[in-house]
Length: 602
Image (tube, rainbow, N blue to C red):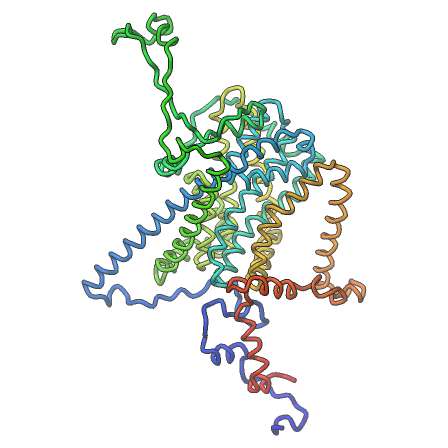
């Protein structure tokens, strides 16, 4: 025994455990080898240092500068091309889901007995948005049903809430492309989770409130009554103008078939558009001096003339395939292109955003106003997110661009949160302008549904952003990001549970009636809330609890720990994405190193 231990005194530690382990391991592996949560360690959510290992511009020769400029130009072209193909693949993916689930989505909207239940309406909004991969399509179905008197405005409010929740699945799917690096995956998945958590928390508050007092319905009715609406022009759709030349060569769909299925005007025709336009066959007596007036005899002859239908020119226009077969083909192809584009975007961003460029972008995006106006930075980010989403005409594209930047450490979670909230507002303003372009008989219904969507997101911002202490989605997303960084399969479980299994279970219970839904779902919700309350008290105020409830150690291990589930998943899926992270090897190294053990207190 060393002399320092003979007097019964414990030596002061002279070695930093984590630092010694890092040196002894030689910093092996990538950035994912850092421990997730250890006291005294650096904050895993802090933005990483962005170092440029290449030579500076001044140190390069003329030939080197030319080469570097050419490489930078090619990277920029590759990044723009990958973004363009990514947007096109999202459009094709939406078409694939519409081919696979459009008829089912329309049939779901038909059942008024189910839609009268607010919980069922919320679940239907989530499921339909996930099925068709387009919040615009889901909203148009709701507008058409309200205008056709098949759905009341009050029953449409929970569906609009579900549509808002269903749109957050895109950002979650995008974050999966960065699952190879644990720190990047933590930041990316946390950024995507903050969007979904915000939507779910807003629903948990506003859905019971809407069922009791209907504030969104009344507020939208007041706003609608205070204005005199006139039908306007169509909202500009920049992305459609850019992507349609490519996507229309692959497939073209008839959106009226989905709406007709919901409103009861459905036909057995295919969703794939076969005939795109018509060409009138004029009579021989039609001359150049005939006028287009309504009372002209030429107009009478032309109105009775036959129209020749012109076929569409896309890949599946003349194919003898069913909608289901075409949907599966497009689904596989679009997912392949989507994943490839995501990986390319992440790699190119990681290569481009280095050194001074990355630091400049980070400084501009995360900048705050000087004191005492520092609080304005977040609200400016909300306006920027709303404006960019309005220009892009797609919240999915905006969130798909934000999440990889978060994973690379360019945008912090605290700044991405208001940007995503602004994206929610931007997509509602786009829907509002689109509603103003509706026909006169559907104008009021369309605008009221769009206003309900707008007020829902505005109320969420007032609840979860105005007061800094109530910005609960940020710490919840960080905790969830840490959990998924440790157990990566939790991300897949979150996707399946949040957007498929739980909504399907709630929908199945709603089919059995409101009494069965309340009898089964009520105790489950109370149990979950009780577990959350006890867990918070265990961490903050354990003395307030009975001794038996101060920890969950008395439960079986599989009920209070994910370790048994992680071993099961790792055994069934022995791949790198499912295997335990490298921090486990570092922890084991700490216990096996005598020098570290001797330096710590006994």
